Length: 178
Image 1 (tube, one colour):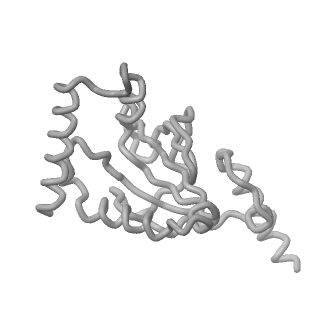
Image 2 (spheres, one colour):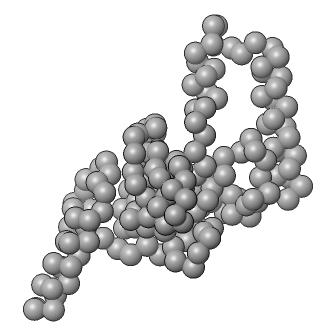
């Protein structure tokens, strides 16, 4: 019992050190302590990433399954800005899309650095008990869809549309060659 109490205190201390992220509270998540990160995609070191490797900044966007934050990667010493996508595992399971996420990560992992500049690069992924984290290239220009919605008549002018389609086709061509 004494060893179990010490372990619980240690877990509580670790949990207090982690930056707070928005999440949907459930009975399961409320009772569980933090779990070490076990999933690693593509990193430049042997140690998988954890939340302690990032300084979490402003919210960039929210979606059905989670949120995206601007973050500064601290481990490498370069303090590179990245987009940290935080996905709620319960939401992914509830809507039956966990397999789609695995497929997306696998595709990114396979094509890796060979990707076009027109496809957002996945640097790494990791998970804990309640969330999956994707470390993505930060694109300061924002989403193409939001830019489209801001256009008159919700359309791009023909030259801009042609440019976007050409970029998309180039990215698809490179992906299919791989």
